[in-house]
Length: 252
Picture 1 (cartoon, rainbow, N blue to C red):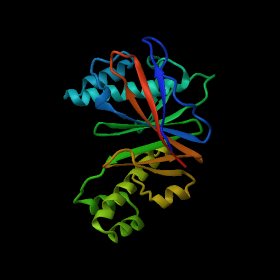
Picture 2: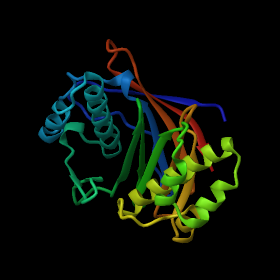
Picture 3: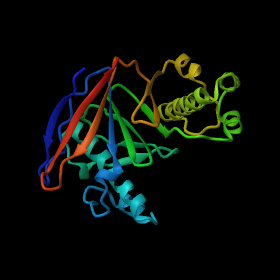
Picture 4: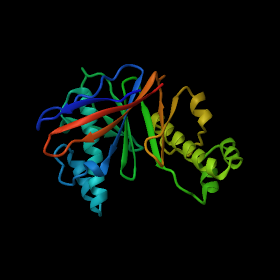
C-alpha cells in the first residue's frame, strides 16, 4: 500500500489538528518521537498537576520526554473531539491509567499510551477500552525467573523449548501481550498470570505490532477490531505551525 499524507495545520489558540476519520471497528495507533518534539518550555496545554509532575524529573531529557508525551496525548485526543488540548481533563483509575472526562454530548473516546526510550505509541478507539504496550528487545539473562513470576506454566514451558534468538522475541511478545491486556481490562498489576491464549479466550482482540527496528508492541481491545491503522506523527519546523500525519500501513 502506498502511504498517503495529510497535512493538518494548527494556528495558535485553535483546536488540535484534525486526524483521519476514526470509524467503528477501527483502532488508530500513533507513533511519535518524544525527543523530536520535546521542549521543557512547552507547558501551555498541560494541567497544573502535569506541570508539577514534570518539575519532579531530575534530568532535562526525561523532563522533556514527559512534557512532549503529555502534550502529544492532549493534541491527538483533542483532534478527534474538535477541542483545545488545554481544555481536556483527565482522571486516573487505581492503577494510574488515564481516562478522559467527556461532555455528555460527545461520542465516547478510549485511548491508551506506552513509551520506551524516546518512542511513544498512542492507541485510540471509539468502541471500547484499549491497552497498548511496547518494549525494546534486548538480552535479559534472568529471563527464567522473570517468566516464572509473570507467565503461565504453559508459556514458560514453550519459551524453554525455543532457540535463544527465537526465545528473546517470544519473551517480549508474551510480555507486551500481557501488559496490554492488563491495561485494556483495567486489572493492572494484579499478580494474575495471563497467557496469550487466555487473552484470546477471554474475548479480547490481540494484535502484534512492529513499531520500529528493535522494538516490539502489542495492542489489546475489549471489542472486535476490523482494522488497525498505524500512523506516524511528525512535527514540521517551528517556523511552520503545522503537523503532518503519515498513514504508513493498515493491518487487517
